[in-house]
Image 1 (cartoon, one colour):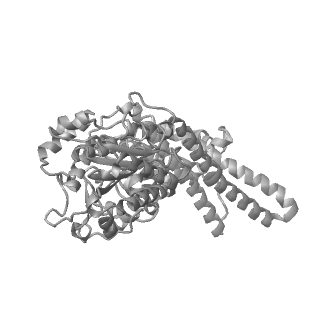
Image 2: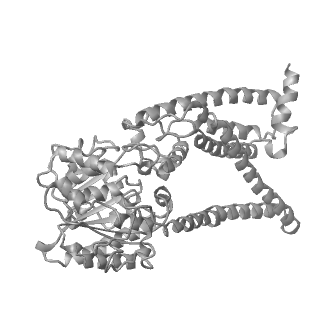
Image 3: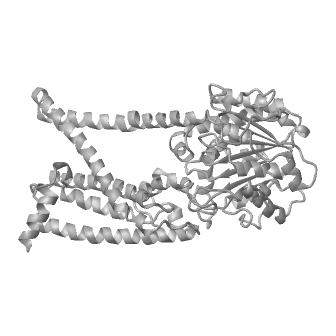
Length: 558
C-alpha cells in the first residue's frame, strides 16, 4: 500500500507527471497551507465565496514565498545539504492539508455566518462559498508562476553575466537587477499605470450626467445663470450635487414656516487647473450667489470622486431651514477606498486650499455679519478637512463646528485625539479631554459621551463604526496589535477576531473595497447618523426628537 501511495503521490507533488510550473517544494507548500488557513480567520466585513478565494490564494502565495525563503536561509546557515522530501513527508503534508483546509473552510463559513447576522446581511447560500477553494487555487498557481518567471529572468541574466564578471559578481548583479526591476514595475510602472488607467477610465464618467439631474435654473447654484463655473466642468458628482437637494417646497412642507432656497456652489476637477485655482473660483462663485449673507456656511471636502454625501448636506439644509450655503470642490476621479490609498496628498491640498480661501473672505466680514462657519468631511474628505487645522483649539477658534465621518486611520488630528484619549476610554469610543470640544459617537442621537460634561459652543464630532475598515487600516497592523483588538470589540465586530502579525493587515486591507457593500450603520456606510450629528452640532431652536425621527424618514424616502 505504501509503495502504491508513493508512486501516486510523490511524482504528482514533487518530480513527476505534472508540468514543471505545477511542482512545488515541501517547505513552500507548508507555508502556503498555513497562510491559506489563516486567510479564513474572521475580519471586519462579510465576504462572498469568490472574494474569499482571491484573498486566500493571495495569502497562500505569500506563505509559499516565505516558506521557500525560510528553507533557503536554513540551508545557507546549516552544514547539512539539501534533502529531497521523502514519500512519508509528502504523505504527512497531504493528510494535514486536507484536514486543515477543510477545517478552515468550515470555520470560515461559520464566522461569515456570524458576521452577516451581526449586520443583518442575507446569506447568499452555501454553494457560493464552496467556490472559494477553486478561486484560491487559481490565484495561487498564477502568482507562483509569475514569481518563477522572475526567477527565470534572474538565472538567464546570471548565465550571461558570469562569462564576463565572474560567478559571485554575476549572482549579485543579477539579483539586484531583478529586485530593482520588480520594485520599479510594482511600485512605478505597474502601480502608477493602473492608477492612471483607473483615473482616466473614471474621468470618462465625469462627462456623463445621471438620469433626472438637470442644469439649475436658479442663480443660487453653480452651473446656473450667471455662475462663474460652467455646468460642463462640474463633473458627474458636481452636477449631482448642484442639481439635487431639497427644494423650497420640501423645506416648507417639513418646517411649516418661512424658509429660504439653499445655495450650493461647486468647482469640478476640470473647472480650474489646480487646487488653489479651483478654491478661488468656488469662493468667487459663492460670493456671487450671496453665500456669505446666509446664516450658515458649510465647507465640504469631498471624497476622491468628488462625491458630496447627499444625506449629510440635505440634512444640513433642512436643519438650517434653507438659510445656508454649501461650497465644495473635486480633486480626483477615483473611488473613495482607492483614494484612501493613493490620493492623500491631493485631498490634503484641496481641503486646506478651500477652507483657507473661504476663511480669508469670511474673516474680513464684520463680526455681526458673518455666517456660522462649519466644516464637513467623510472618509478621505475628513482627512482633507482636518488638514486646515492644527488642533482642537484651532478648530474651535476658526469654526462654529465640524463633522468628520469615517476618518481614515492616518488622519493627523484623529490620531492625536485617539492616541491621547482619556484613560479608561476605548479606541472604538474615545473620550478626549473630557469632551470639552471634540467628541466621538457611533450613534450621536443616543450616545455622546461624556454626557454629563459640558460641551462648548464650537463643537467637533467624529462618527465611527467599529466595523469600518477605513478607520482601522494602517501599516502598523503588520507588526503591532492595535488597541481596538486588545480591548473589548465593537458591537458589530466578532469577538473571535484577533490580531495576527501580517495576517490582520492583509485581512483589513481586503476589507477596504467591501466597506460600502453592507447595510447602513455598518462598515463605511453612514446614512441616518448625519441627522443626529447635525442636531448635536447646530442645536436648532425648537427642534424635537420627533422632528429628528421624521427627518430621517424624509431623507430615507429621498
